[in-house]
Length: 388
Image (cartoon, rainbow, N blue to C red; front, side, top):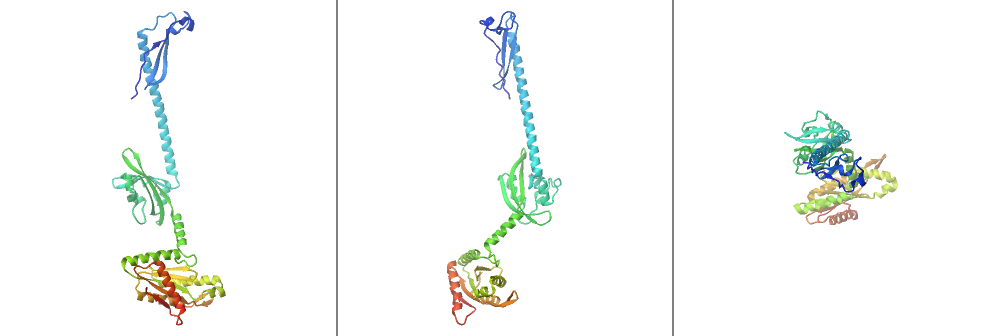
């Protein structure tokens, strides 16, 4: 409430008034009555009442009337100022709402306002970009269940991901979701949502969805390049060591065994020297394909470097490891045709059994030593097994 203070009117001092302010025929200070206009403790103006010289001095009646007038004038001025501020605030609110509407409707990314309905989260409104993403009508989607408009390809539905915002258990959500797009195919969307209150007591969520399908594809490609050999497409040394460490841990935890097979191509340098590196590269690709075709899908067949390949097969008993080595030897030693010429490459295979308590570095040393043992023997066996 506005508190108005009415101050009593005051007359100015009349000593020497004739000399200071005039004579008997003019207005003078002794005939001037002043009253301040105050509202809420703030001076907003003043009211003055002047009487001609020679008239009776202002009395109690004039002072009371002026005081009442000053009070009413102060109220009127204060109310006018309140009205002006209210009108300005209303205009600012309308402009703010209009700017938000324009930004919402014309945003290049999907934007949706979600509220709590009787059956769960429902759409309050979506913009045109969101409609295009999901093949939904901007008008027809209103009050529809959010999971019906924004359907996911797999995983948790969007309503489950944002329920905490509607229940005010959390304030923001940021998550990547595989959605079903307007064409029925999958697209990846980055969902960023925040709680808001659209109307008093009505919880809501403002949700933005950015199509990151291309970014996800590029991310997968970069990951593949970082983890796979550029020539053969097989897992590289980094992945081999990571999976060997995992197999060693599992062998120790579960008491199971597996096999590490170190495969080195025999005299492969002569192919590069005689036929050229392009032919050598084609031969490596063909041999990598053969190696991959004879191992289990759960096994790891990778290129360790140069003409060296590694297979990690886990779990696997010793007898099965020897059979696997035979299959690898037969597949990789078979003749192949490269640019119209028939080539044959031998392979030396060393096997080290993965047993509980072993270390990856020790396994590599044993498999490598077993491989060199193949080459040093006159009978040239297909493989040498180091059972540990």
